Image: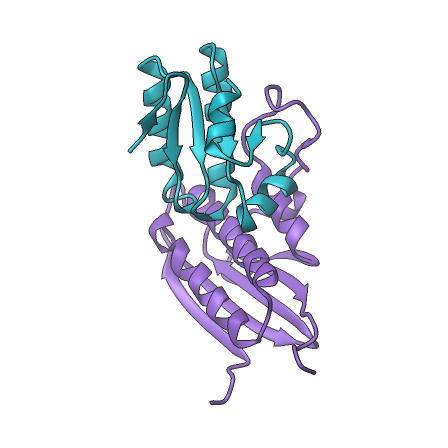
Length: 145
Length: 107
């Protein structure tokens, strides 16, 4: 069976559909022969980014979340597109994870986890006035190669 | 299905703790604390996936139970959720134990 080099899925922007985005990432990474740690890291990053869009971006409006996953030059490239008001999560302040837990503001962990698990995180405003978040992670060498 | 021991309530958390399931767990844990069960143990043996929404629930419950005079302990953290906890910086700040018995006895 020929392996797909990219996959695309569009879901309604609500929390109930976050799991299907994770499933899409998992299936694609599994087909690439990536180890579970790699796959889970990408699943988490997509989940955190999409959760942000659904909970905050679409707080006052409704819309879809489009996920595209592909392989470009030995890296996994994930592109999340929405039509929510422009918001650049890469500009969010880094949470102070060294602060005592009792003193720490709840929240802000999502973008921290994305930065931790992906190599490159980039945001741009789309022509339609929504958001496009691109997450890139270098693939591990194929097993058996 | 929380199992009550003399000192703590053990709450199993299974499969996914994400933006979908976290609010339900938060309501449950808050309810336990409000009913006077302020010593909580989360049994994470069968937790496969943990996202920041779940971490926030754990942190909030730890804080809420602590303010009520008890606390929250994690038991059997493993696999990917363990990695997420370590990356979040809460590892070592919320007491974590290898077994439910140890987590319960530590109160």
